Image 1 (cartoon, each protein chain N blue to C red):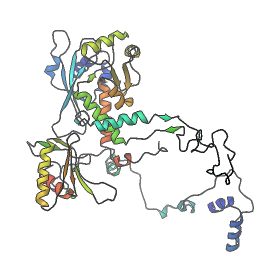
Image 2: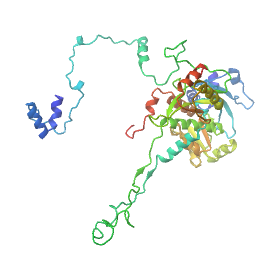
Image 3: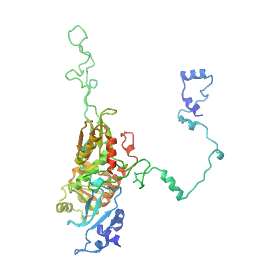
Image 4: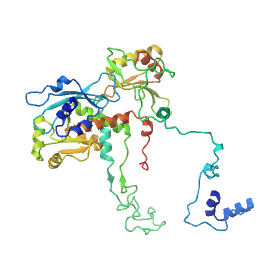
Length: 190
Length: 292
């Protein structure tokens, strides 16, 4: 039905060719009014409606129980990122922050409760990589010294530079050291 | 009764409204509240607020709550401020980004120069193509000619509009609020009610408390109390703004920022919500002019 309506607007040589090829008359005898809107539904909508035969559907019942509604609510998207409920162990291997006491610096977790260690590239899909540690408070230089030692110990042959942005609380390493730094910071409880 | 005492101290005129505004505020110890000082006013109360999304890094920021219904300052209490908003590092680059954006996005360049088609004349070929030993020329208004049209000149109207990423805008607000607090240019008042509509009252107030000279009052409603509206209207460097109008440029333009308690709550709530939204990645998408 929809096809017919749509095609009703299309007329011309090309369409007549189609008529010849298909051997059928696709142009309706009475053209629809110009002001009518062509119906171009997606395929699922242009197919005929399923009859109101309840035997075709899975059975259901309507419940207005607030206890059951809680399960639905858990599936709805949350407006804000919530704090994870405390558990001894998490299936993903994620660990909550357990900062060491008397540290000269503090590394704040991100809004997603993850470690703020990122891999950046100088150009999109480029080969020059940088590792950035963000959200550092306190003595950024002390942390830089510590992390430099860690990377040097893990990769003794590597020559890398670091850059400290004290105001922004960021340390940048030249090279990809995300896994090393993440593992180290996690082991320290950050 | 205890709650009413605290609220009464904060805003004698309308307890109900103050109680509504201080919905997340809880008072500390009853003994502090019930002791009245010699001048008849209750002593300052430490109001510990239940901050949403608390941090565990030990940063702590507090501010006095003042009154402005007398020229003489009276401390009404002390409240906690969220460290993620009032204790972030002063990123001058982020503040500059915000100010630059605010200056530019409203601008429309109206300068236009004529191109060769818009100049008068020039339709005729000045001399024949061959035979004169001269360079071939098609129009006296060609761009290489003196008094010719301008090639690739400015065309009006050219908008300078662009959109700063939302997280840069939010970070700018947080930086600016932190800077104002660190420089002792942020003051929190219970309400914007002043007893008179004389502009000299506001001037005396600023003089007495070493505010300003320029002061920006921010409330969470866009209908200011009549007295302060009339008074501030006559002083060009004292302005009133609702929370939804708060911006980096205005904060930078004014020496002192005065927030009401309600405005503070609203600002914190909004910024924290945007910082912890689950759809932050979608928010950070490139701005399209067709979007709402």
